[in-house]
Every structure is written in C-alpha cells, then in structure tokens.
Image (cartoon, rainbow, N blue to C red; front, top):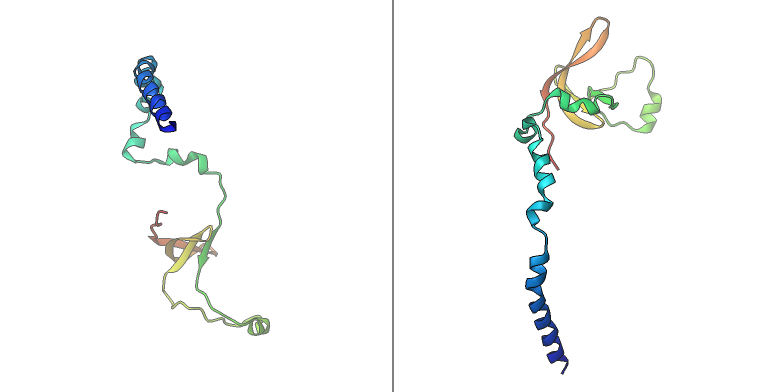
Amino acid sequence: MEGNEEELELEDLAEETPESAEEAPDATEDFSADAEAADQVPMDDLDGVRTATDLEAVYDIPVNVSAVLGKTHIQVSDLMKLGKGTVVELDRKVGEAIDIYVNNRLVARGEVVVVEDRLGVTMTEIIKAERY
C-alpha cells in the first residue's frame, strides 16, 4: 500500500506543476540588471588588453626584489672560518646572467651594471610565469 500512496503523491505533484509554472516570473526579467552591467564593461577588458592605469590599485604595494649573483653550499664550520677578504666561489661563471627574484619568485634574468658609484641590474630576459 505504501507504493500506491507514493504514486498518488507524485501524480498530485505532476498536476500542480503546470499551474506553478504559469505563476513563475519570467526568467529574463531577473537578469536584466546583469545584462546592463555587461554592456558597461570597457572594451579593453573584453579584449584582454591591459594598460598601466588598470594596475593603479597595486602601485603602492611593497615587494622584495633580489638579484642573485650565484649560490654555493657551505658547512657551518667553514662559514665560521670566513673573514675579511675571503673569496667564496659561486656556481656561476663570469658574464653569465644573474637571476632576479620578486618576492622569492624568479621573474627575470639580467646583467650587473655600474650606475655612478653603485651596482645595478639590467634585465635582459623576462621569465614568463606559469599559470596555476
């Protein structure tokens, strides 16, 4: 008997559906505000073209920039023996590009330059980031 009661309830629901469908508001009315907002999106955003003014919100965010000349592995005991004038051999050769990191992420390679009495770095290659 329980099966018959379920069938009756389903039949009752099926009979009510056409009336509730007629009472439902038109779906296109609900999205009209979204459609108007989509019309106001600048063409640059739709084409994927960005300009410097698109980034104004992030201009004041501080970042750490590091230019790594080379790396080496050394034991603590040898590190403690280092003194003024000690030469530490790195894993790079003279004239080889150095790595430029922004917030510990490799973003470019470059060369060391002298600007007035200070060292600087000129970027020679931008490393394209992989998207996650």
